[in-house]
Image (cartoon, rainbow, N blue to C red; front, top):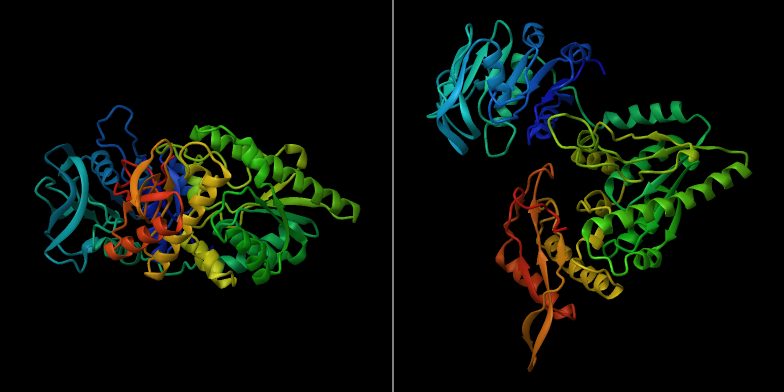
Length: 520
């Protein structure tokens, strides 16, 4: 890369990934780093700018993270956001103390000087805040750019040192002019060109993969999702028929998705595919199991063992023909990397991705061509590589699939019932034009609850299903999608008419937090 990245220093913020995405949307390459990374290591990355994320509620909390002064004295442009702004003010001698008024959610900011990061701003801005501590006095050398009722200093700058700070969250959509602020910082104050474009990843990765693989063979586990599909298509572009994909059908995919992988994907790419139908084995292993975490562990273990057997067969076949399978492709994305140990400030959410826990004696080296990318960037690449639109825009779907959208025991009958209901919901939401607006719409089949209904001349005791349409940009936070009543009515009518045994459809109207997207 011609220039170093913009580093987003993660203090444990809910929105740190979102900041990194917003930077990329401004056509500048960004990377997330943990706050524990020593300053010398950060500076060794040759960053073109540094952004300090939100984090704890106060710089005075026991163990609250700090910033090495080297960062502020480096001459590299630095923008502090929320906690990052407060820690900048505190370290440089400003006055940070409990706010006279805590500000949470929508807050009106008064712009005192429409310059620097607030260049082009009107006299007042609607912003999104989340703070109970405020900067009362800016450090020496700083100009106050804005204030709010609870924050005497809500935005500030020291142009001579290229230091900038803002109390509100410009990265969230609830701050309408937030992207303008970030772009002012990146392009105007830091002087960075609009040079990042994920399309360049294709040529870059193809060259790297060819060099790495040489004349060896590669194996890839396809899940049915966009990440593994795009990773496979990218590797196939680099090495052609030396890639073999393995698709394990565990029986928990949604209607049409098995065919999508086995036929549409192969037809679009020409990739060599080994498909293993293990659905009966998975069902047998889950007999009598209701506890969600046990389901996950059983499915994960079974999947690994099934994939392992298929992989050994491919390795053996290649060996008999004088070849060697040396590499394993995974569709790991940048959020996966971050959530699996990328930072001290956030919980490590995921322990493995795609195919994890394979025995070491298989001796595979990993190829992760999407490791630096976010989901929207991956979709753009998938489209460029000619993958079917249905696959590229597939709703995110958990690895255990429908098994964790069935509350209680999993049976063939309950799976078929949920699969039909899910297909109706997806079809009607697509018809209504919500494919790009709704992040996903899990349909959940409840257990140990029978709802009374009336159908025809008699009373029924059927199963309720829950619709969980959510909108999200990062999956870390989500809001329930305001689907029009008439669309919900059609979905409800069709499910109760067409799915025998379901006599009630309910809508989940809880955001994340406090609820998760999935029920289990």
